[in-house]
Image (cartoon, rainbow, N blue to C red; front, side, top):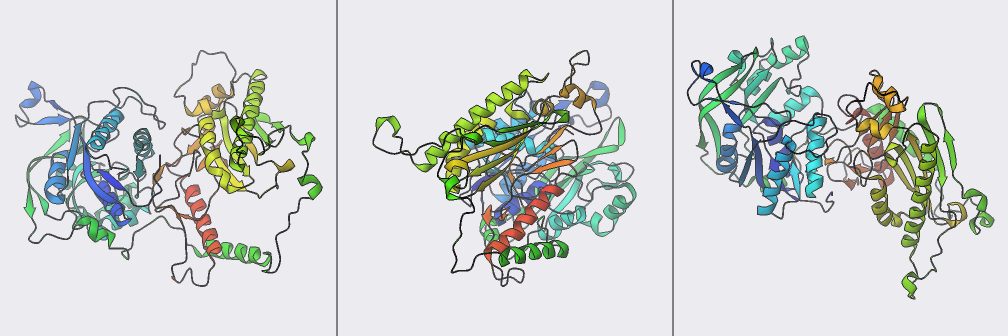
Length: 592
């Protein structure tokens, strides 16, 4: 569902806070065009009669949400319509957080469905919308749900803050690079942040006077509030708020009845202070601001560069000279005949339910001289490769069925955690990928490495070969919240669910464009982790994550004198390092 055409028209999903505003700013800087903004407002419930004695007559309480920021919602319409001058769409949150697992599956009356209906309304009014920006930074819970909704609506998720930088650097980027002015509208970090003392305080002043650094050192509080310690309302962002800034004129602090250290700032009255001179369009000013630095999750350490340089020089010395030609290392006698003894795959079953299936190839290479539908048109190479791949999936399905019959578990393609896919030509990839997706699906798929090995390099002149690794019951493990404690079945799932120290399987599957690491170009995950120790990493190429284009020399010091393949090698290592780093805190979307 991703759009790789470059710049896209997008809707900004705004909470009113610093993260969603800064994410919108970064989306503009990357060349996308902001069309409108959308917001999910909290449902309000009336106070009981006994509570009315202690509160203002017209005061309601907001219902909490697992998914959305609700504090400061009263001012978001003014932010969009009067400060930014853009169309605004809002929907009240009617659902509850009925599915609170990290893996979201569509469920009626869940608050995620409110987001689906909101964006569906936006699409009807603006059919040109191609993408949605959001301010998710470390919340896998939030990001995966936004990606789920985007996939259903065929929209691209833009998440340029995802795992963007270190804790303090993130806050500095928002305040200094974004020029954002924000106030605290919710605190939940006793004894560090207190409602009566810190609500309505300017975030920049709390940073500059050392308050946030002190709380980070003493209590481990995230300086940018990513642990839910505080929420903000943006009152000004010069690059986006072109027509005015918010002025909060009447506010009241409301504390949680069960915890006086938790409170929100209720905004009873606010207005927009008009700016004297209208600044240039936010879209135009940001598009033309190509030289302005954008903080990104970027690996450029000296140690990594030295290792990559060593590998690059070693590989360069082994490249053929310009006068030589690449010769196949496979004897012609083997290239030109079908090796009947190799058409059966190798299957190795190991302890713990792990299984390795290798050398999955079609029994006989598809003949591209075969005419399709009795016509005179020959089947092209790509179509022949597709036929071989479909034969391979049939063979694999038969193998899984036989493994199931000899096991207490029902083994399915969802149990496959890694796939090596070998193609004779990379031009076959697009057609095969569609059928690959139909077989493996797009929900928590295996990691994959796809390599083009060259014409007639595969046994018997085949065009496709596949290896895969599977873990029994790991598919059900990812999709199961609890098990039947009364069950007497001794399965891998039962034992895995009972082990609270080492999850059987975790999956890192990020489907949003970000500065963190490339989006998977196809139905596969960035990484699958088995028993907290064995990482199966997807193949990496030299794509720049935020643009999904191959890196090229731009004349900077780092690229001076480098060949494109060297730059791509450096970028591939950075991407791999980012994914591995993403496995640490909050990277895995399931299984722990």
